[in-house]
Image 1 (spheres, helix red, strand yellow):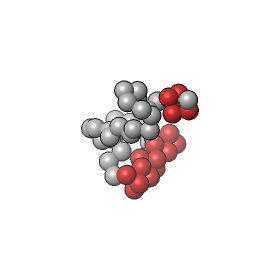
Image 2: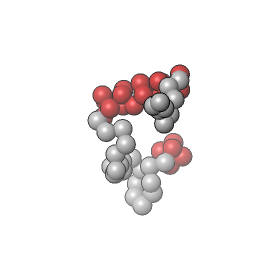
Image 3: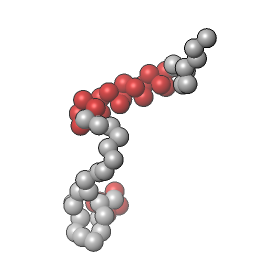
Image 4: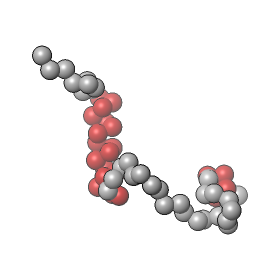
Length: 53
């Protein structure tokens, strides 16, 4: 008897749909490296708080 590691349910279906949408927009939904944006002045990082200030 084959049992899936993760059973199919509404949450796993929604997650798969979201990952497919991300894949369609940007490619790999799990990149190994993210490119950092430079909205705020260095040496600060682009956090939500820093961008809003």
